Image 1: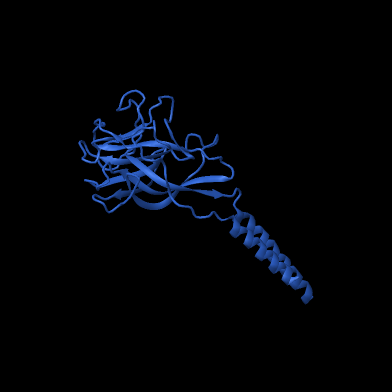
Image 2: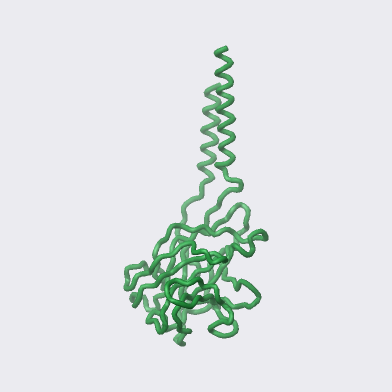
Length: 242
């Protein structure tokens, strides 16, 4: 009987290990589309964009954001350091870091990145439609030397599924911004600073991978099973003593 119980426990633990998500390489949210030489809007504040995780919500498909980055148009280093953050739709800062001036941050496809502790973004569905929106933005100064050209907008730039930019509402304005020093929440997007049909501010990017979390969690299912096996073994042991 003890052998059967041991074999059962090992089997459950083995299946749990198989269910753990495999590590994957980080992927940029979108590929660099180059830049346009027209002067972008210049102001002191944050500029960025909002997005959805469009994965099927079952099983739990999470976008794990692992790195935040800002655009380095020539790839020759940033003139200034830039604070960058990600927020939930209600304005809660989920994570932030600073991309240093120069070439210290890693350069990937035109963007300089710094790692963060992974932030999990759930798939958007009918129950969390308004809360699953996430925003990313970086701080710039008026006339910032790092923002003299405009990274190409949505057109011609491929976003990596399941990340997809969203406008929040019917305004169709995809560029989000916040005014002021520091790292203000980019909660404004109307009126759009670039005029009608405002594209997202692609000065910012992030890297991510996908994590699948079984629902309900395998660990939750494992606990009562192990408890049952423990109590069953204890029952047999007590009966033998009697």
